[in-house]
Image (cartoon, rainbow, N blue to C red; front, side, top):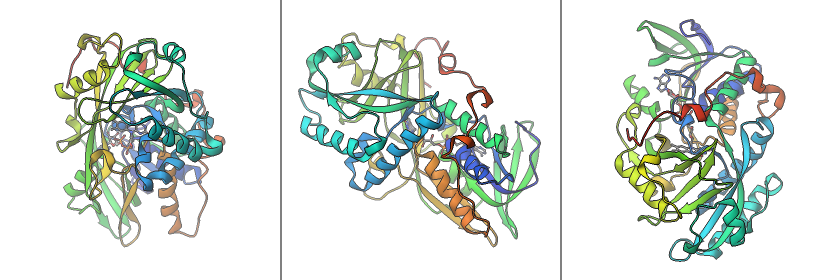
Length: 423
Ligand SMILES: Cc1cc2nc3c(=O)[nH]c(=O)nc-3n(C[C@H](O)[C@H](O)[C@H](O)COP(=O)(O)OP(=O)(O)OC[C@H]3O[C@@H](n4cnc5c(N)ncnc54)[C@H](O)[C@@H]3O)c2cc1C
């Protein structure tokens, strides 16, 4: 990938190389647009898109909101499609949902949720939910202290290597003729008579300019700060919701656990076997500082360990922690909703120029990145006469594993961090 060889003029310039940025690039390239370029200030996927819970899922917990049923249905459809388009990196995983003896959601409510989840998945389902015997639970999640629970349900979602997915989608865009520059920071943006001009700062400190008819601001947690720095008023108020994870050693789990915290708020959290390790997450708290400095604090670590350990036969110790990581969910503020109940549905803010426009992404999920990208592609192309359909749902528009950019597998990315540390 080039670094300092940015083009001077393109039809579409995408800012930010997370899943949404590379998704938009792939979408446009799949429609035959070669004149599309992406700049990323670090390396592809170095933001939120490599520090998620790594689930490709409908989002069972989002069924709490009736108006999110559409989002869940769409995510369940995308879940199935991604297992077909990238089967080596998006794989089914069994989830065990234990029902607490004391407190928590009642069994009938969980059952209703699981029925609806199956119903919304329809023909895209992986397997219908069912109850599990204690012997089955012991086999699938031997660490669980069964005495705390009175019932167990099994359902399915999918798991991925999020960084691998970013790289696969980016490779697919490159294969179709799009271009990408890493270590190029979008510093400022201004309108001119033929669209927008973006000032780019290179890693050696030099600067250049790229003009484009359309600019897609896929900067996630950095999106509004970038606009404000250029004296552009964002169309939406954005909030950053911090989520932290602990990477822990393998504890012999064959299925993931979908658990309800008893440490205060009854929040859902996950304990997931992942690439020879165990992932524990996530917390949620509003974050207002510089997204570059986001890190888990001692409270986040304590909360996760405490929430999880009370359900395990052998608790995790702080010295077991291999790595701690935190990321930010970038969401459009919704009045009347707290952080965890804000919809994960995306919103696209548009600022029109005399010719062209600046589109900013709010919200979204790894799972639904393709539909968000298609929405943006449709909007960009609907302005011109030359409408071509997105082909990202077809395997022929995807790079094969052999054609993909190389990246460190998680087992190596997350090794050698030593004993417990918080940022
Ligand atoms: C804790 C947590 C867990 C999650 N778990 C899941 C999950 O299990 N499943 C799921 O579907 N979704 C999950 N999500 C949501 C999902 O991870 C995000 O919606 C998605 O990764 C956002 O991608 P993005 O491309 O918008 O942002 P990002 O991945 O943050 O990309 C923005 C990019 O912009 C770059 N950048 C910043 N400033 C500049 C600049 N000035 N110039 C150039 N580049 C710049 C950054 O380096 C970064 O790479 C989770 C989110 C969080 C926070």
